Image 1 (cartoon, rainbow, N blue to C red):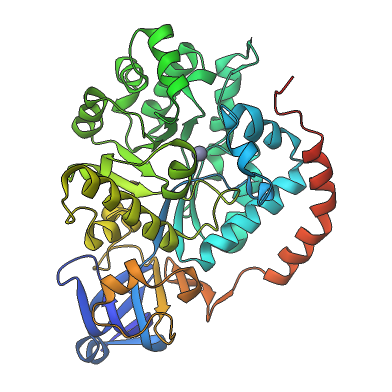
Image 2 (image 1 turned 90 degrees about the vertical axis):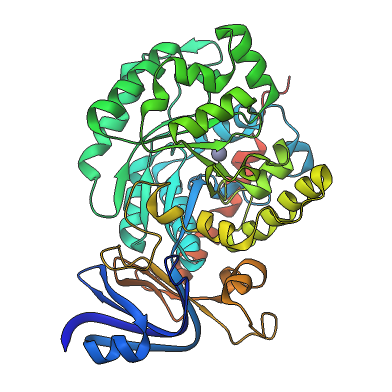
Length: 445
Ligand SMILES: [Zn+2]
């Protein structure tokens, strides 16, 4: 009998490997990694955990990966009404002016709210699209215990003013000492329209020389495509390809709603990842069609708490409905956007999307796991656990979230931080946030 740190038994284990579902299964975890997975009778006769927990009416599965989020925009929640949503483009008119209002304290509180909500929703790994105050995010990651890719908000053109590219990118280098088992640092690019060619080339050099990944917003706005054609003579992703940024691994492109066939070929041939943000793409941009092609590496993004509840199990339901509406409308083919593909996208394709060994319950993978309770009249009965996750369960069903074999949510409660404290802080700052927001001009004369 081998001793391990933890053994978890569950009614269903969705492994994302073969077999994909084990009924009455168990997982043995040691040193932050999966040691074994299989039928409970086999695992329990070979492994004794320092701790053993049984989740008799639960699904145990890999943690979810949020491929695109803005952890420091959450204080905008419920401020973006229809008029504000329609601002063209919303990022320069509203989102960036808002980010500039943040103090360290508010950025820290935002980060904490976001990562706490993610953890409760079963997200174990996320990619920040560009935080105005990334060190505050690192502190929040540390307290909650989640894994995250931290990137500083990166642009060097604003209102016609150009900032030195090296100065901007120094913020990435300054973050590198923060890297540890749970904090990764990548480069980010806010938008092609907000950076110089010089910055793009220097960001590429930084990523390739330091082995960093990159994430950027692209193909999200028709004005951006027009800008790119006017400024560079080619479309946005062709610019990135021409300048060599598509050599960076991992690359995660947020939105990518407006891609030409040629840009789609670049995504496929270079093995780039796409972050599909079902709610925000639908509200602001257009229906997402890329994942229609089975050769596309994509994940789901919440696009931050300003727009969503940071619940990817909700996002996947939106995605499937929008995706099927699109393909049925075009081809009357109802087989696309099937549940197992959606589940792979939710869990990051076995780490391919994010470049880490997560997303599969198999020996040697990181023990980033969640359990979902099956004791709810809104979600029962259950004939197929995969269909249940995709169609009936959401963040409210998450009971436990483990990162590296450590509980960060246990029995539905955050372990590292007191949620009541976060709520009290939010109530305390809300009046001053409203006042600040109402003072922003949103670039409207
Ligand atoms: Zn975004």
